[in-house]
Length: 270
Image (spheres, rainbow, N blue to C red):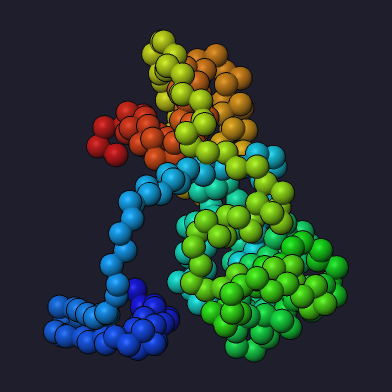
């Protein structure tokens, strides 16, 4: 996947500023090797282990909707991959006009907007959003913001984030502006033992619907579907088994379980 090229440019500038040199050897279709040489002094001090980073599994409170506006498709998909597992609804737009159409009748909880976009740029989009009385926090994204700490409420935005950014920085910004309390994976309850009794499929159509809900991370939709199926006593062993995965936020195990159940429920040869 192509990048922005910022990493190499920054590395070269830093290397030359420190009096070093950078070189490259490249072989077509095989790859490139970059070498940096610096004259650095030795540091004699004991290494201090870094604190372990706790993995975030979700957040408390209602599900929030985040709109990502960026003309770079790779960046939009990256934000989707980062935010959806944290139980956010993620809407994406490739530009300002598409964003305004997307949110007609919708009140998102937060906007992530790239500044440099063709046509309507990020600042112009912010103005239009505020004119439409969209009051949700707006975080501006750009590689040219500087250190990312500037906040100028006169422009209508609430915060900035410099590309490339660390995922932890993004999570911290979301926690502040959405007033979130994160749920960490090491704090989740241990999944209960699966209920005794034979687990029967409620039907291929129902299982496929649950699979689709899991693919988009729609946990509340899954819970509603399970509650509806549990009204039938013969489905309760199945719904209780599925709940163990949902309560542990184990969507991978959830998908595997349903796929196996679905195979059992299909007629031979299908």
